[in-house]
Image 1: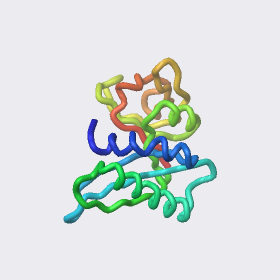
Image 2: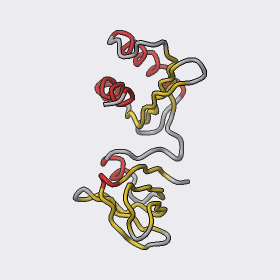
Image 3: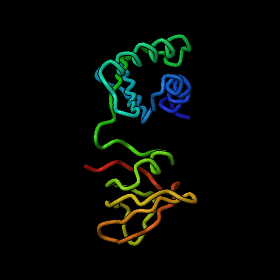
Amino acid sequence: MNKAQEIESLLLPIAAREKVEIVDVHYVRGSGVWVVRIFIDKDGGITIKDCESMSYIFSYVLDVNNVLVNSYSLEISSPGPNRVLKNKESFKRFTGSRVRIRTFNTINNQKNFLGILLGFMNGKVKIHDVSGGILEIEFLDIKRANMET
């Protein structure tokens, strides 16, 4: 488990309690300091007040649990229009949306797909790709997936 996954695992129960979804977590080296970027969402969207509140809560939890030994900067924000889709629930929730998917393995001579998300079932994401028609992609073969505006 890498540090971003460790942070996410620690904060998931707190986010659930606060009725906020953790969309993604990045732990990267910035200019001289480590940066923890947490993208959050909720029904109706995220406000600045939500970001401030979750920043206070998440910062406290990270500090109390000594997850990060180095000093860090915490950034909380909305995932934006090109939000990442990284779990099965996201693929179900955004059925009907335009998505971009990159796979680990080649499918029909390509690894990059753009089209309408048709759903998620039996461990597979179904998409109507603009160049390849309707196809199913194994969830575990997805390297990265994002909403596409």
